[in-house]
Amino acid sequence: MHPHKAAQDSRSRTKNLIERWIHAVQRHPLPVVVVAVLLTLWALFYSVRNFSINTDLNSMISETLRFRQLENDFSKAFPQMSDTIVIVLDGDTIEQALSARRRMAELLGKETRLFRNVSAPGAGSFWEKNGLLYLDVKDLENLADKLADAQPLLGFLSKDLSLRGLFSVLGMALSSPEFAEMPAESIDLLFAQMGRTFEGVASGRPYRISWQELMLGGKEAAEQRRQFIVLRPYLEENGLSPGEEAIDAVRRIARELNIDPAHGVTLRITGDVALSLETLKEARNTMGAATLVSFVLVGLVLFLGFGRSGRLVFAGLTTLAIGLIWTTGLALAFYGSLNMISITFAVLFIGLGIDYSIQFCLR
Image (cartoon, rainbow, N blue to C red; front, side, top):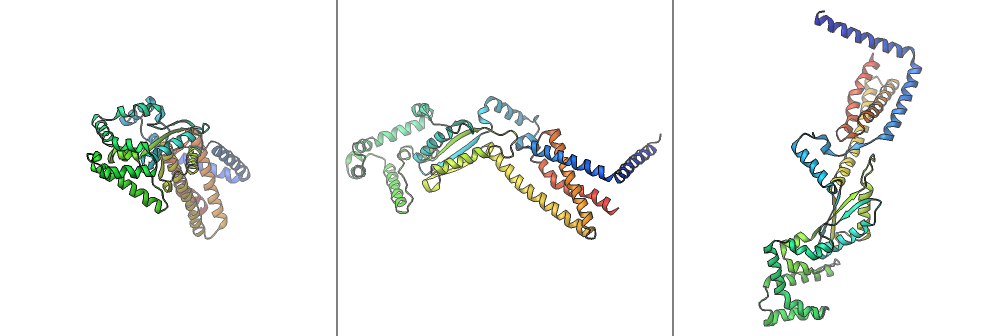
């Protein structure tokens, strides 16, 4: 048979099949409506019961790529670094950052229903005992020199830890020949810290002198003012907002402990769980609004295009909503979950799917 003739026959058969289907629907409208409603209710129930969104953006990238293979190998070797919430604490001083980390880690560790693991890098008896061993030799030598230079001052200060003792030591540091060899920058830094303390008290925002910063110096002190807590929460497998309850618990505990900029510590939350949750919320809010606006605008266009016929507008929009519910149910049944791209399908479906309704209604 000639290819052109075969193509015509195929189109003719398809046309005849569609015509028979349409005539059958027109002859039996009530059973068709009942079946359509039942299928729609089943698809809606199934969608609500099994709705799930995969917020992992990496899952949309091919597993055959080299960097994805390395990432998977890393996750298998260090599972404790996957699905984490990372708390970043920036303190005005090292002592404030360390205190906030210790208090938060202690309370978060009691939330065993939400977190499977709570760790604070650099905390614990091991680091308190052996932490200096991990410094570079040069940095360790500089720290030893600073401690040696400050030893006379610390020795006198330890005899009287009151404010009177502090000012007595400062007076000796400025006048006594015994302290003449102390580095001038150490004395300047101490007075600068004291000045900030007096200014903070006067302005209603107390500031504490950081003795560790006096010993460590600028660069090392800046690094120590930032502390971390790493959390591994229990995640709801099919939840619409996985990790949200855990993040809410972090913010609640921070409020209870007065961990905020007004008390000298800034808290930020990051990690793959927090980033996925924020991405999901943004997509959900944006797509929900976009879908609603698209549906309303399509209804307006139909109302104007059909000569203000409410009957045709109702038929077109109802068919569109049924098709959207069926499509969502089939997608979840075959693929198990939607991703950050497939959730945009609703807007596309409204724009493209209404074409068939328009053609039938105009005919």
